[in-house]
Length: 248
Image (cartoon, rainbow, N blue to C red; front, side, top):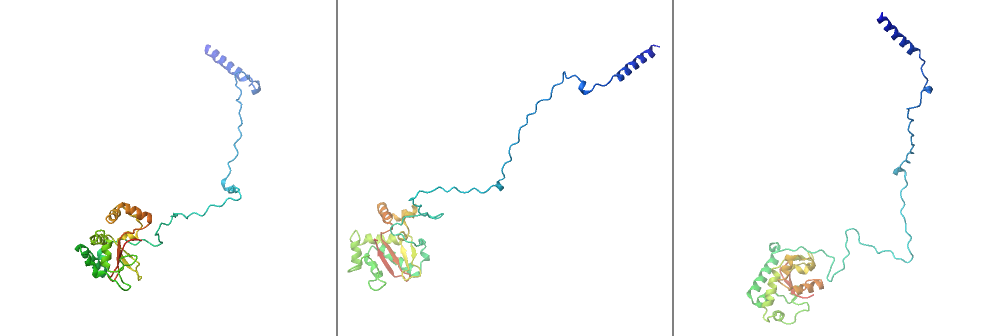
């Protein structure tokens, strides 16, 4: 009997809940419900310009004052403007050689015989090599020689006997040489090579060679002049002794 009452009571409760009408959304109490937050609308930035659609920038031309001269033309890329030095020539610098074996046989023979003559200590030993007539005459002075050539060389020698001249000729012939005017009537084998090379291009080793012939003061004077002007000698391809001179 108690069990039936309990079940009946439960049934009434269910029926009562089911009979209650549903509330509309408008009838719900607004208390306890937070309103939605305000939404701030931020406008989008304008689109970036497309470089492909932009016109090329035009150079700005500044107005020039009247009377202003245009700058002079400058050397092209890689070029250096250089003041011409005394004695400069637009010719390539010949190759410097110490190879005596590369000399033609007549030139090599004359050089060896001249060196042998300088070692004798006797200036007369040079006489057989000195030609005094014709186009192949040996030049011993830029101004020409009057009288006996051996006597001229003695007068040029500081000791008066010619040993200084012999020593100078020996040192000249033992230096490096150059082969110039190749294929012409003026073709020559020239000692020392300093006469054919710009002095301001000499390296330390070459300056030591030079100082066997001249002093440091002479070297500075020659650089100012623009060329080597001390003694030099030349032998033609046929072996004839062409010159032994000093000066400019």
